[in-house]
Figure 1 (spheres, rainbow, N blue to C red):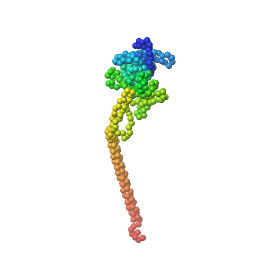
Figure 2: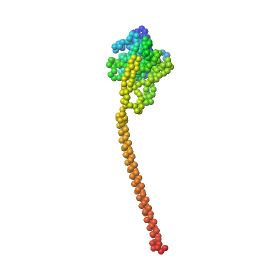
Figure 3: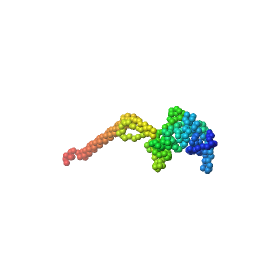
Figure 4: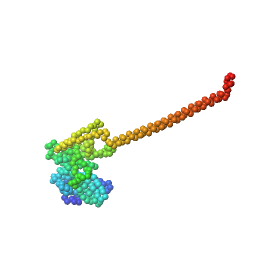
Length: 349
């Protein structure tokens, strides 16, 4: 690490690491936290037929300096802990990596690393701050997935005599939104947390599964509880969703948000729309369907009437032809008898 560009220390104390691989260049990138100062970025290659790695570059990011430039200062007893890769954006000239690094005794940070076309670090930007939960300490684990990051917190020993929850797996939103960087960086507070009431760190990870209701994918949080030998699966949503029965009526929903420090209660008006106002778009379709149905019925009736009249006319004409043929036959038979036996002969007989 002494060869890292920008690093002037004699020795480095490693906190954690995260490894990525590029399929396009077949290179590895290793992010390593140095608990007192920041993190290193090591690029290397390794071929399947070789037992050694070939280091391409070692770079260093000074987190203390980056925080000072944004009027933030690490406490003297705070240390950098886990690190993870959060995303990549590429444009015509630059490649931008988003890295999340946690701290023990302070907040957590997302850093935007900008590389130029020569793959040199062009700039490092404090992109986002993830505020810690009260005075809890982040332990050495962090997981990231598209739209979310999970950070584990434990209660400091000094507060163990109080009735605080011993551990939380906290969830944050990592999406970017407009007009949220007035300070030069965006800020995030906990969306929600999974409580565990003992201090030994749990293992946790994200999983993505198929959602049959939306024909898409959904993200969940998996938490492993080694003390009880249990595994929990928590659904994730940025909005409150609930099912209602058909006879649901307008009412007030009382919501209470709990924490170890304060509870906050508020009311939400749940309003049921009338059937006529429920969905104008649906009503328009219903009216169109009714008009089409009437038109079809009228056309069908006209066809039936015309066809019936035609059949009636054909049958009537046929009946007349049969009657005329019968009359003609009777007339021809009488003439035949009269021709063979005159009237006077019949009289003589």
